[in-house]
Amino acid sequence: MATTTASRSDLETLQALNRDYINSVQAGDVRRFDQILADDFLCSNPDGTLIDREAFLKQTAQPVKISNLQAHDVNIRLMGDFAIIHARTTYARPDGQPGAGRYTDVWARRKGSWQAVSAHVTRA
Image (cartoon, rainbow, N blue to C red):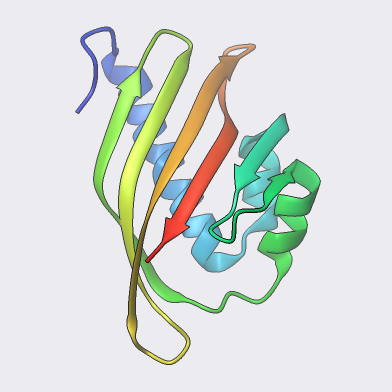
């Protein structure tokens, strides 16, 4: 669901970036994250830690322990040069048991490009 100020091309761009973000988490794709994260990016991890861009990239480079990560009920709220994406996730834990969570990503248009400036991740 988007606000009435959302343009179709911005929504399509943010939908694609959201897919890239989820795919990059699953694949441990540090290179793609290096392209889409703002220099001042911060992430709140499920364990309560707050990490900066450099620590997030190091975290992403670690072997991925979950599989079949998928985003559901993606809600993109576009407010001019600022967007918030809320969604829930499902995945398989290393032992094969199902896992679930939610995330909120904040995006800002800077110099004509959308960059992730913040993320908040929870797991159940």
